[in-house]
Image (tube, rainbow, N blue to C red; front, side, top):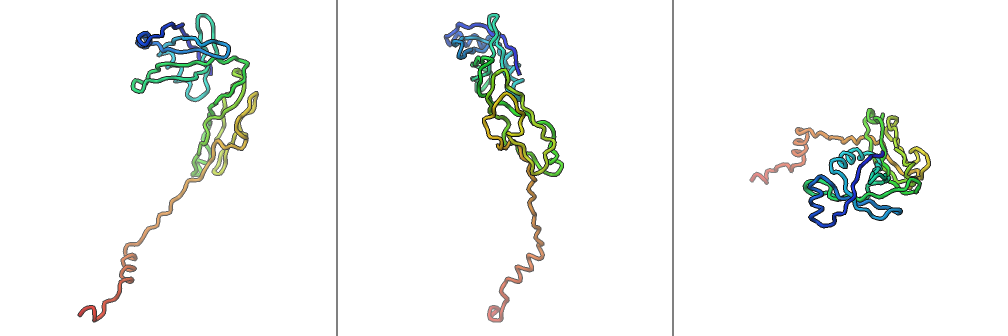
Length: 210
């Protein structure tokens, strides 16, 4: 996913300037990369939050527009206020389109496993995988799990193939269908328990009554 985000150059360095910038609804940020010196910028808090909420389930690139030029970036780091939960600072890493890099790509599991109707449950072991590719070739990974029965599994080797290399071995499990454990409940007959207790008691003798 690619999201567009406008940025403005920033020259503020004092704490009071940063406080005012945030009060005006802006987030101090930095734009940097192997072919770009670290550049101080600011982005709209509301616009960034709008973009950020869309990025939860898949790898997201931010197309930062600054003074008429666009930069292909990923969100590298962020600082969030512990109480207000507002963004205090953001780092954007510029990604050259042809550079090969390692990406952590989310997996979208599609469908309802057949094993659920059989009384089983899906155990998702990995929700993302690391792969190496060019930024322009990062895939959206989807796996159809509707055909999984109890005892079945899907592994890295079942993921789509393309112009990328997975870091994990093919046999690394992603999702496994398990049967639910049935706990046996043993019901004890109270009357039988009482009779057993009476049987275990020592009989009274004449001597014990004296």
